[in-house]
Image (cartoon, rainbow, N blue to C red; front, side, top):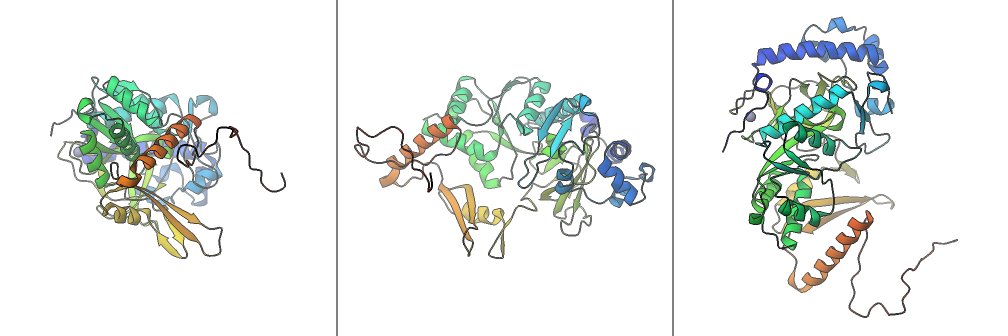
Length: 435
Ligand SMILES: [Zn+2]
């Protein structure tokens, strides 16, 4: 495997003792900023009779309780900002599943630091100025699209800001523009695979060589599929909207864990139930403290993601600790009739069945007295049973086309020729009761 140049060797290869010294200095500045400017943290410090001067060692951080998603929601929209709005140049949202989402603000420095961080991440995957990078993360209120866009520009590669959707045209652009790097969710990459196959585009005819995938947990089996079908090397990347977006951690060419950007984030692993700090190699919830954020500093923020940490230096030369791949969200489970169901369990079960796509959905129907769980699964590309093949393909193509056009999901019912009479009106409205 070719070794990619390290973009910030003076930071990424810093000896551990120096990393810890840098972290302590930045932690003290962050604690100060949070205490002086964020009412939530000021109250928390005062309740515990703590002042910023009490943080003399990095371990003093453990004296603070964890910050949770609910704390951020309570400050909606701008309550957690540590600078006045006039210093904020950008605002993003984190995707909250319940209640208010969290609002994340950036100063001009925050935006620049994010771009640098993402450029570091891209370089670790071997991306250079010579690459053509197609981003299929959405560009909008969520952070991933813009985060990778700014990072790609900071690195000096050419960026195609395609955003999400219109899968067939993505493939067309990929082929015509000779895209070499793709960035998005792994599951969307599978849609790209399916679209390319449907269009008869041979991966050999594409120029792709690298893919960076994140935004949601994905499995090794998905990595293998993507690597084989698109003939690329796939890298896992990790970010969190509340921490500013992508670049929080990323794989190097060794693919042996994700290097946490320890100059920007102090990371801990805690028992999700008790909050107790866990040691190297122990699986628990990732907790992050920002070390360089001006607008949105967070102290001991619960990510909701489960992983473990390896502080040993990596064979690539980087010294930043590596986290294992995020296996699932600590709070990402559903209870059906008293039974906890983790999507990972379902994914593992589906992964063992040949011919199925790893993508699925669990639908819980709570409208009836006895809850219902429905799991939607799909066949792998090219696994359509022959007798139904044409109909199913046609329906899928029509549905995809209309959904891309209208931007909302539609069901397609496909009948034989003549099932729609000539005089049939183009529009029919079925009114509900009382209308
Ligand atoms: Zn490494």
